[in-house]
Image 1 (cartoon, helix red, strand yellow):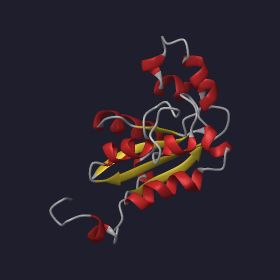
Image 2: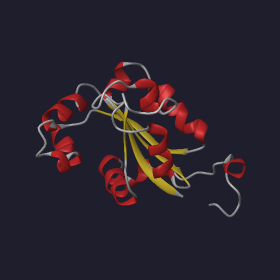
Image 3: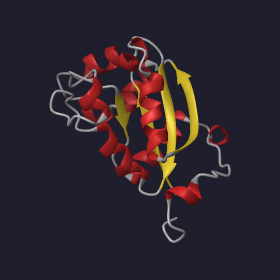
Image 4: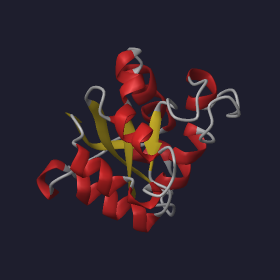
Length: 153
């Protein structure tokens, strides 16, 4: 099973959408393997968004992501990274399709509800950044038989 990171951004926390967003992933059939609330430091944000450090909006992103705690989640499932990205929609909430998380809850490029890993390599790095090994749980997911054919997992 593939694992991926999702961060429920400060705008999600402030707007009281935590349960709404988490329920979308649960209803799809992804398994929650880890979740916690953290307040992101400048150090971790600089590391997490290092690929954007030369962009004019770099400081705006860091300011936005540190305005209040966030919820970091590890979701697991077959093709979890792509499934999560399909559920979240495109980055700009104004352009995201209705029915996606961003399409339903966002009007912004920055305040766009969630961060989601974009590849297996990125997911592995990001999960290590936000979770200790003992904070990711492996447990029997009894719904699995109703979610997948036996040769899919």
